[in-house]
Image (cartoon, rainbow, N blue to C red):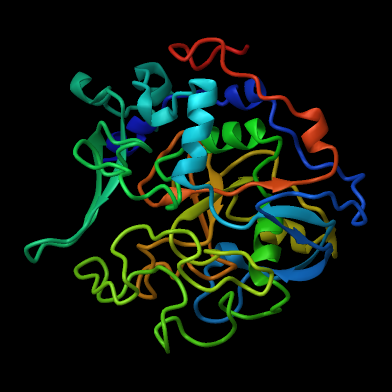
Length: 362
């Protein structure tokens, strides 16, 4: 199963440098505020980052103070229509649309792992199969799954132009953001924007439990993973703006699709940051370490998805952290971009020199 999960390895970490994704500029001032269509201005400020209470997991603790400059953030997750414009303009092939290389796959598995069978080294991705006939749902590797066919051959994006683009790896998300002259948000920026001024609240809307009142986000209703009653109207992704925005006017900061961030994942990131007092514009750690899979570097994603439930991850909380290797594509994970001073003028998308050789820099 471990080898199966790692089939998604396509691109070595050097692609980050090839893409030239810009990092946050500490020289930015909160007065900078250009016109940015489709985005919301998030004024700079200070907040308590991290989770409290019984729902908070160990990697969400301790809470610590963070200070950020202002930034623009996409109002919604990047949609299928927007991602299609990118691929058509650049002829970009996503991670899931390329066959994995065995040597790259084995480099990220623990020593002594057996290689997967040759017939599995084909383009494809990870899909969550919905429960049926009394069976529980679960994840499986599905050849042919990609952002164009998020649940594998036979699925399509017909009528879903305004749904979030999923089955995109971190590399794919970073490439799209660069094409737009933007970048992925840091973990701190993402949580600050999601909270929208609500300090120490468990949810982006406040204190009320997700199941109380009208649905507030696209999540799982019913016993996970055996039955989704779809009380909110959706079994999988929902169109952008299907649920009320948070106080900053941002949609789907809880549920619908997990969202990639810029940061590497470490379970002890908050422990390290809490020792520094108030942290200015944190960029995350320099490297990744997940004690559960120490050989596998991972990036953070945030916000939860249509699969999140209180009995499992309650990932729709603004402090909830999830992680995956940057070459992983999933049927419930997408992204949105941010814009900070100097980016639009200085960033030019550079396509890879060879889609057949994803490790080559342009």
